[in-house]
Amino acid sequence: MLDKNGIAQRIAREIRDGYYVNLGIGIPTLVANYIPEGINVVLQSENGLLGMGPFPFEGEEDADLINAGKQTITTLPGSSIFDSAMSFGMIRSQKIDLTILGAMEVSENGDIANWKIPGKMVKGMGGAMDLVASAKNIIVAMQHVNKAGESKLLPKCTLPLTGVKCIKKIVTELAVLDVLPEGGFKLIERAPGVSVDFIRQATLGKLFADDNVPEMVF
Amino acid sequence: MINKVVSGAEEAIKDIKNGDTLMLGGFGLCGIPENCIHALVEKGITELTCISNNAGVDDFGIGLLLQQRQVKKMVSSYVGENAEFERQLLSGELEVELIPQGTLATRCMAAGYGMPAIFTPAGVGTEVAEGKEVRNFNGKDYLMEYAFDADFAIVKAWKGDTAGNLIYRSTSRNFNPVMAMAGKITIAEVEELVEAGELDPDQIHTPGVFVHRIFKGADYEKRIEQRTVRTKG
Image (cartoon, rainbow over all chains, first blue to last red; front, side, top):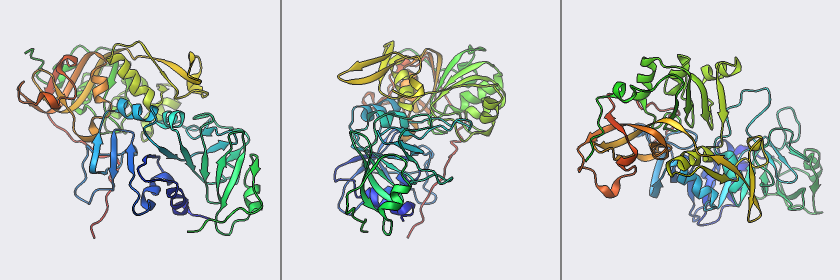
């Protein structure tokens, strides 16, 4: 079973040289720590920055330079700054190669719910609806089951949707799964020490698994 | 050259009245028009509709207007980090319209570019699409979203000149340029105000034609919402 860093580390392997990538808040943010040596990626922050660098050294924080999580950050050589409309222009016109974000639920046809729980205070969708509606490649980073032990990979989402038929790949603490175009979750890899049966039990949506699903190697 | 300079925040907001719709630039607390917000609090006008990506925090930014119950409706993409906001929303004192962030920015842009509406895929198939026209282009569905109609746009820039030309600094640019273009009246507060001719025309982000009033902000706190650092070594 993977911890949050393990999920991030596994997702980092999906990143190719030359990618422009948008990382959501939570586990996706950790992906930046595991981008392999020799792979050049440019991180987009949708508040208006391409080329997001690490946190500043203490005393060098700049109130005018933050990421979409409102954290103080830095720029890198080759960074650029732009306004919010242009930022979502590059998202909508698919200039961003990969979007990685968290989810509360994903359905077997690729729908995602990640912004609202009825009866709880709604904070808003931020840029998530724009990202999932336009990104050409989206990976979801999330726990396989919720805190109540219920599967988050469902036949149909029960929570209000963020986007429809948009998720292609999911990485959880148990597995890597693809969402099949015809519907259903295809088991691609198992986390170390996790059996197919265990994953099947944690997956409420349709699960397809070959006889020999490989275990992740780190 | 037309001189757009006013004496300060108080004069800049002098004709904003109860019930007006305002656009306020900024992302989180970054690049918000601090001086105008303080002046609006001071003036005590109420029933405002505020179009702004966020709603500030309890004791800073738009949170100050919320504390004084001056806001009737917030139009935002994300309103976390604000307990007073939550209280007013749950008690029904405050109305909120949540809009995807890209849609928010582009509805501002549309207003500034003189276009009545835009088509965006954001929100298709979700509750955001309820009651909206859906059009299919090249096999993909899009929602029609209208340009905003705001009485005033209030923005913060880094440098400005007496002709109203603006330059923003770093990610404090965010929503400011598109909102600056979108207001019937646009008010810009700047950290540094110079004579027309001192800014390089090639470096201007917002041309002065969009700006009706400009002043140098008396003071900037520039509060940081999430101070994140790494240690040397």
